[in-house]
Amino acid sequence: MHLHRHHQDTTDARFADLLRIAMDGYRASQAAFSEAIAGFSAWNIDEEAATLTLTGDGGRTCVYQATPIVTYLPALESLAWAWANDVFPVLSRSRAAQVRELATQTGYQMFDTPQLRATPGDMDELCALALHHLQGIAVFKTKNQEPWVCYVLHAAA
Image (cartoon, rainbow, N blue to C red; front, side, top):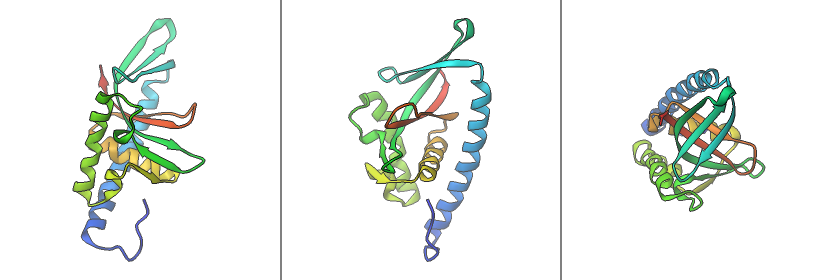
């Protein structure tokens, strides 16, 4: 999200501060998560249970609560919020709907708009803001197929 030069009101300033804080947290969280999962070789998302299971050598597993936040089509630069996507079960959409609170908190209606155009950088910023808002530990992205799906992870289930 790049603010226009002529947008210099307090809403934009607060949003810029929030985005900076969220991105700093996102970078740190992603680095720590990458290190923590380095020994795992397979993953599985259970949409009904809203969990991510990582499997490693010797059958070792780790399970996280996983809240889907966005789907993303990189070729079209199209982002859709999970709360508005009927593909996800009710539990997942309900958890994902908390991201809509950011529309009221920031004054930016993109959080309450079901679908929007977004560059890959914008997608990362929106994931960072969702991670910060949902107080997750990391963002997990499934990029092995389209659309990509991004999940905010929470403490091991």
